[in-house]
Length: 238
Image (cartoon, rainbow, N blue to C red; front, side, top):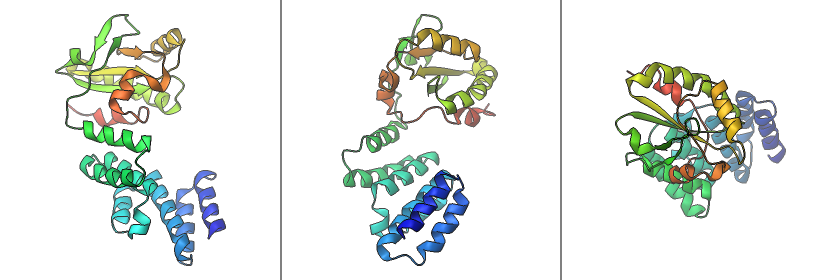
């Protein structure tokens, strides 16, 4: 089953063909030895996660034997899917199980921190707006809908989402929407980041510390990833 499982991963990562990888994995899973079935199970979890089949993934994990489901990687994927579905209590359940198996995993800890922030007052963010040079605090924006955007000028997914962010900001900034950008760019890039914002219509406040991933706001929020499709979720909300 080892070579077969490796070939399925090759289909997934090299050929970027999750459906082909899934069909291949399911075929070989039926004839695999018991100790190899777990490898195919983890592969299926990964494929379901990649393809956004969140409900199917959670059902599969919930109904799996303990020797398959009680795995930090499997439970982390399940937690991420539950978070995508805004089911944070369910996500915390998976994370608690994962942390019992791997209590020092910093990624799991940050995921748990993100879940625990839901429904609570947002931690304060303060700094200097790179675009205006004026002090800016999250608490100053109380009463508005605030999207906190962790991003970097070199991040491909972030750059791809900027046009949506700019479009939504233009449409809703006079209706109570504010975006607070937090740049994860490294040191000595202030002028480059400022120019990047100007060139791409990013007119909302931007905090730049030049500390990369170690910026203070990211620590407060347990931020794991960069900009996603948050702008699309806001679009059409009156």
